[in-house]
Image 1: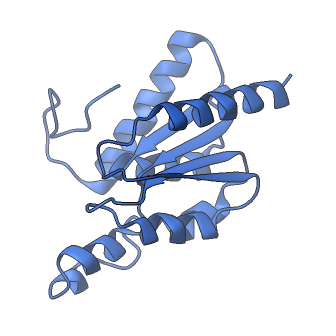
Image 2: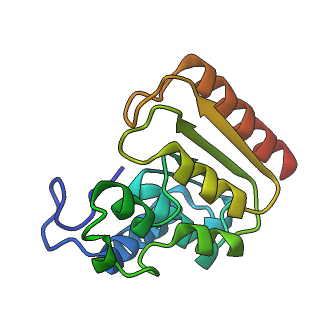
Length: 168
């Protein structure tokens, strides 16, 4: 829905802190435009975006959180793809498994079991750290970018309906 600084049409240099600030600003603007509180919004993040929305969710809880192909920590991903250099990534940099413990609300998390970018095991590790209520959807035979299946969309629709009904 928006580009982080340094990506797409946005200028600037990408940083973790900048991405979180950009996401927070986008959330605030959307709340303003929709005339709702941020606690009424659903947050959804994919891959790196999942780590960003987890931070937003712990800072100001949304109505629900949806994560797709998200990692437990940036260091875990670096360990897989760059094992000899992963020590350069600080352990606390985008440590989503540690942060998600602070989120207390509905969670739908999904991950392709053939994901070569973010290992399925990293998604499982993140999910184990999350509080209830939570739901994990395994997307069979899906890699990192081909997870949008009819079965997943049905799970997503059901999650949104349950979260909406719980607030009535």
